[in-house]
Length: 203
Image (cartoon, rainbow, N blue to C red; front, top):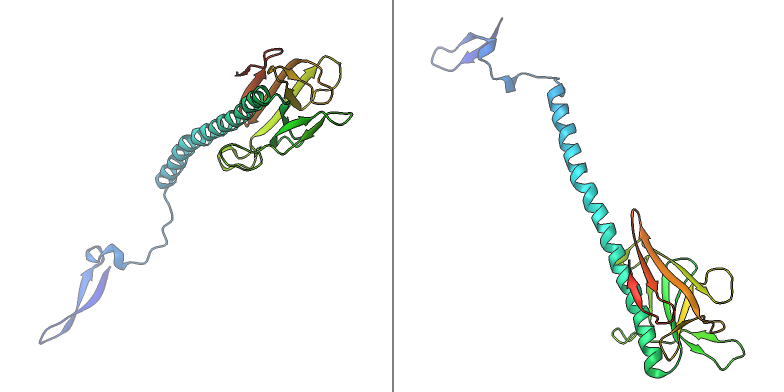
């Protein structure tokens, strides 16, 4: 079947052109995606997913590393300050698992009292860190487990005396074991405080 076209000239007339000579772009089409095209899209999406998932996972690991470093620094700072100033200093992990707070221990009251008025020597702000909402460690949660000479529930705080020994902030009893776990997704790090010496290590 042909398509009629008018050819310009002194004696214009209509000419019948074979349909196969007409550009395909001139023909209307309602053709959808072919099976091959759909398979290509699926393969591309799969490749992107395989590349992206490890990236997100590795970011989780980096966030846990950042949070771990912050807690380790706070513990070591508290111990060194206690030994330098001769005043009990310590670290508390809040019950919501989101923040760490550095304190000094006021022994004047009948019951030792944690005073959160210690300033970070670098930022000059109150020494506390929100590991969950911090930009570099978003989503990380901290769980503390400190055990002392008197049996009881795990305590979420540890203090250091003038000799650098870890003790309970409530009654100064010696610490038997102590750890803080930082976790996000499949990643976690455990910080350990050694009894007697107060040495801080990461596992």
